[in-house]
Length: 256
Image (cartoon, rainbow, N blue to C red; front, side, top):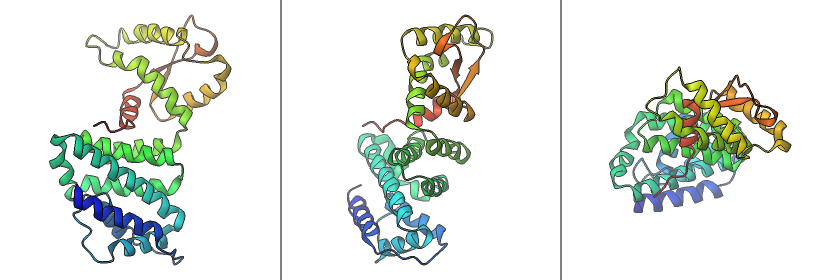
């Protein structure tokens, strides 16, 4: 994405260095148009002073901290899109057409709003990956993305680590052809027992796990299931749900 990348880099540098304006503003739609250009999907940064104008509008809207968050998350989106573009030839036509895709515009709008609520870099990076993995899978459903973005800024790193462990343990079962409502409970109990016996849950951290289980369950990513014959830190059994599977997969790094 050669020339687009050069123009985007210049725009990002301008956005980072422009002086702060404390005048309140509300030009959100124009800001989104500018962000689409920064992401490298709206053609070249052709308008003279475009980056400067965008910087002014962002800072009018919410100040320097928000502008910094936006710059970080949009840079992450642009970098992941470039990785996807360079490494997957079949993706190039899709990426080149994103500027005219209303779903992508809505996704960037949602991302910009969520970036107002966190300055934690790991959470901002999660937001970017959710959008770009949505591009990769050609699945930019607004409702689904909004739910995942909300989770991305609410969950703690410990929650994501626990979700990863549950995903690695239970994801293969979700693909079994013979899995049905009659054998699901027995299968999940056996998998959970092996999961606990393998030492995935440190008994010294049981209170932290309970908090993570509660947050993940509240988002519909896992479900507590009645579990007989277990005790200690693994007494409460939690099953991975399809929404949890999808969310975790959307957090993954874009591979070349």
